[in-house]
Length: 202
Image (cartoon, rainbow, N blue to C red; front, side, top):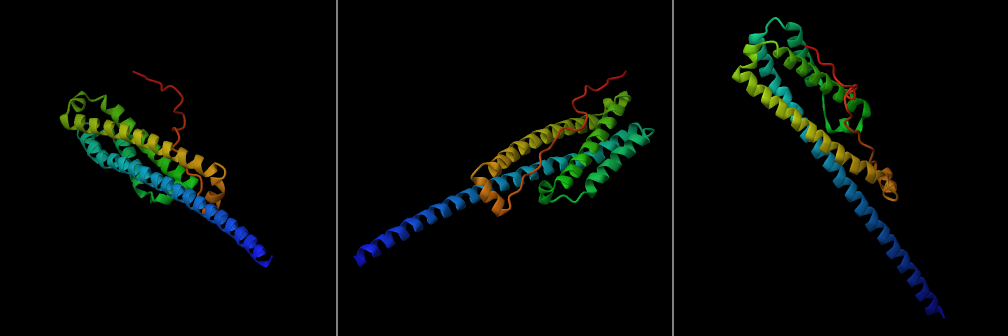
């Protein structure tokens, strides 16, 4: 009788141990999956930063070329230089994607820089000699390619963030995500007013 009670106790302990081991293995698997998704975001973020840096590196040469042909456009040239300086002053770390205010500040500075570059390119339209300058054309082509790369990397970043944000909100993984400190990441958003059709004047 005693041995039967001991056997039942061992079976119960065994079942509890197997159950606990199953929960532990499941939690470990979910945690590792979330770590992988988080690292995917970090990797995508570094690609976005690389493309923004490429653009920032191209702009001084572009400004210098335009200045040679259109020195009187000081306001536009100064605007581009100042916008680039503001972007350069931002201390950007991986933590930016975890802080909505820092992320918005980063995106706002980049949008302002994009607008300044667009104004510079519009000014260039008024100078036929500049428009036909080989150096300017090469820089303009590189800049257009970089803008396309930025767009692709931002879209890719948003897709990866969507997958991560979905994973940390799904039950039962949400409980592991909450305990392990996984927080929702920010998306790149369209620039304010992007839905409006631009006015073209000649």
